[in-house]
Length: 253
Figure 1 (cartoon, helix red, strand yellow):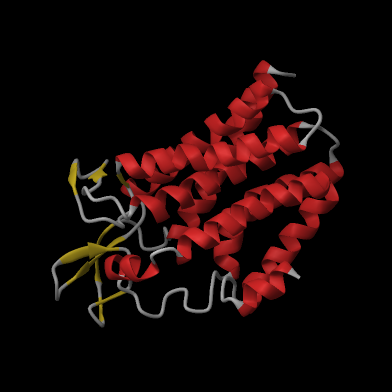
Figure 2 (tube, rainbow, N blue to C red; figure 1 turned 90 degrees about the horizontal axis):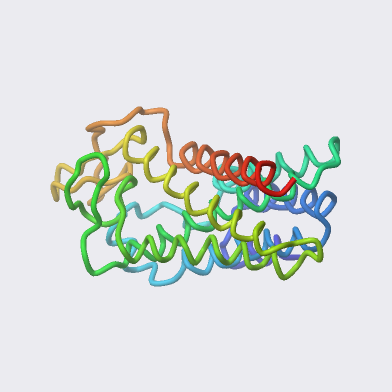
């Protein structure tokens, strides 16, 4: 039902909805309804924030065809692929660590999405970690105070949800999930700064991540052409998942 509603309200494309259904089904099978609630918290909050003040964000990103029909299957798996792999692993290997890995991956995805969607609205220009200067809002690899606060709150939303939903949860494990989510988001920023391709608009002389800007194709100025935002997001969720799982094994088990 949620997938159908997502298509109607253009939160997901048809293929994106199918990908979300697969992710949800595996999550429910491995981590029961509580896992599905955690997944829903990530998806619903991220979708709402993406739509929030969209007209302002379009001015920054300026790619008119982007996301008109909702998130694609690639975007769904980029953010939820690692948590899906954790759910699959839990089917074959019964170990509570997979639930922590699942939560760590989603805490990273939530922190990154909140940081991006809220941070872009900061009144001050963000600071790019590679270029070591202030840049226009919307570029990967740039951080702002507002975006950093949003990342912490986003990771906390997953960590607190885990604590409230599972009877076996502890305060320490929730802290681990929040920590993993925040530093997974940091990894996303670093990957975006050093490896993700950056493009340049020859009309308004602006750096962007969009293939189109000012109704013209942009040109690549640095970064690897095959390192897309989806790949960066997927890689960062793996980092967040590994941090969560590693800290859980080290401190709790």
